[in-house]
Amino acid sequence: MRKILAAAFATAMVIGSAVYAQTAEDAVGVWLNPENKSHTEFYKCGDGVCAKIVKVADGQKTDDKNPDPAKRNRAIVGLVIMQGAKKAGPNKWSGSLYNRADGKTYSGTLTVKSKTEVDLSGCVAAVFCKTTTFTRVK
Image (cartoon, rainbow, N blue to C red; front, side):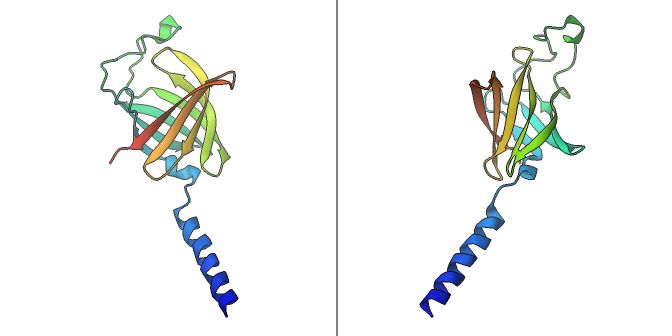
């Protein structure tokens, strides 16, 4: 009887934890960047995820750091910074990230940590990476 109860309890724990497990789809929504207080919206696009800046708090109005002079007058609000990221795991997306602070594009990942936190990582040569934890905007 003890073994049956222990097995039932273990099964309930596994099922219960699965309910709270984070999925890559939990990334969809609006998130706060703690470094510059901007808001970024991650949204489904095709079978991937894209992201665009929907609010700026640091005063940067245009994409003035872009190396392409023809793009330096693009508005920051509405600027797509991730396009077509592909699912790379149960709670992760992988693709290219545009950094408006330096006008460069990096290899990046978006990892869902919880319903209220995601990590956005940008890497150069898959060795030098910077990760920022975003929080969900309510």
